Amino acid sequence: MKLFIAIAPLLLLSFVATSQIIVSNTAPYDSEQYLVEDILLGNGVSASNITFSGEPTQIGFFNGVNSNIGLDSGVVMYTADIATIVPGGTGTDDFLTPASQTDSDLITVAQSVTSNPSANQITETHDLADLNFDFQVVGDTVEFEFVFASDEYLTYVNTEYNDVFSFFLSGPGISGPYSSPAGFPNGAVNVALIPNTTDPITISSVHPGLNSQYYIDNPANTTVSLNGFTTVVKVKYPVECGENYHFRFAIADCGDGALASAVFLKAGSLGSDGIGVSSFANFAGVQGNTIGEACGHAGFVFSSSNVNEADTIRFTISGNAEMYDDYLSFPDSIILPVGVASDTIWVTILQDFLFEDIDTLQITLLGNLGCNTATLYIQSIDQLNAALTVDSINICPPETGQLVAEISGGWQPYYVSWNNNGGLGDTVLVSPDITTFYNANVVDACGSVRTLETSEVWVQCPVAIANVFTPNGDGVNDLYSAVNLDDYPHPTITIYNRWGKIVYYMEDYQNNWNGTHYKSGNDLKEGVYYIVVSPNSPKYEYTEHEETAIQRTISGYLQLMR
Image (tube, rainbow, N blue to C red; front, side, top):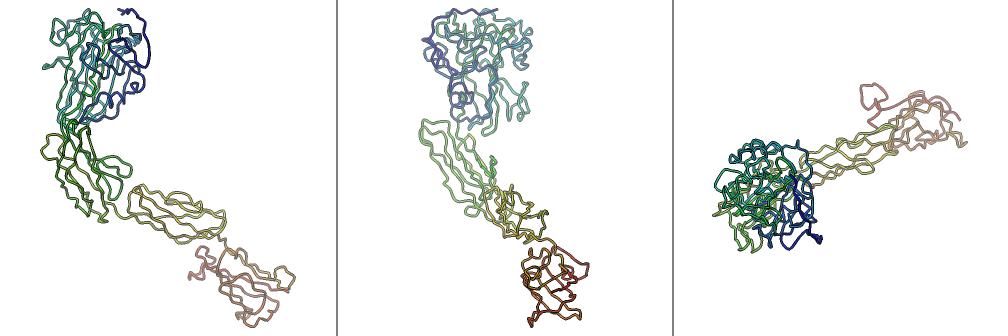
């Protein structure tokens, strides 16, 4: 079966239109998020995780003011290009979806229509349009209005060519036979039902011979290019306010893709009656209802489904969190002016430096049947502390030195940066060319900052005794210097003669001994002397002596020649 449409001259602008129904899937109506959030949603409902699968031309916006569809405007989903909904419109009527395509949930719904003797022959779907989103409500019910329409009317009533649509709802308190996404483990129910029954709406369950009070015949296709459609149907289903639910709106051709069907969702009709309150927090970049002491921001959002009247929302404040110790005071009521659906009271959370169990701050609305309570959970956070494990280390190139910042308190993750190109992280390896001072700056996830004390990395290689010294005034080797002694800022040097008498001693040796006696200033005689150097560094152990101070000295014989 193929549908042949006489094409009339048409002016194509941003909307595809004749003098009657208007449809569009150009920007912003090419975005499923815009269609749900800005067109479909009414008061008291918020949506997230919005996705659509199908051809982009299968979903868009409609304006039905000048049509007989029964709805002024809203979102349309179609098993063909929505341009073909307009009388004389152009567009693809069959996307040539493979016959093997099967949506098991929609097949189950189509086969459940007992009034259709051919229902069991429906085994494949085509041209699926599939809109999914999560949502929350402020009341105890969710509701919306829609119209189902099809070009299969009336020729294919009670046949296997019985296009199918469903509104699958899943979430807390709901258990159903249809599949549901991860996070909603108890299955889904179909809420696209004939009013006051459990029967799904299809062309075989709503037509002149069955449930005719809900059917409108449209053979002339003068305002909408679909042969028949339902009256406006209202869905209202009980839910738990403030909980997370999921809707799947799905429509597909059955048997083949030749004739198309549509569902029109009334603009602003997906709503929930009531006044609601919810808590929110951004704790170290994590969204939820837990906030750290003096970390991030938090508050309560108050919403109302009635924006036509000003509303004063009053509430009580409870929980084990204490005002002025754990949070600053805030008012016990909020006014939502006319036209305002929601507003926020921000809460300033304080740090009491007492590590204790999680505190709670709870709001309870007065005289309300919607979302009555909301709770903020306050996580205790210790003061951020940080310190270096060592105040100095010694390295001899190409060695590297390890610097470690020990951090406690605050809230992870920590961001640690070191000056002088030391790098990032609580543990870094450094290899400066010269003795260098390093310090670290620690910032935790809450923005608390600690700057650590300085750690000095000495570039010091082991000292070696120079055993020949010629202080003869020729400008060469006239001043004594042990190998690598320049690396040490305050070395001590002691020189003994052959009889064990000290002939030279200096605690802050600067490579300036010229071979004279340290007291008399007289030139020492040529000969062999004994030299002891104490670099005053804890790194190198030159001997295995039991005394630490002696382990870190180096000694040897020195030949003085003139």
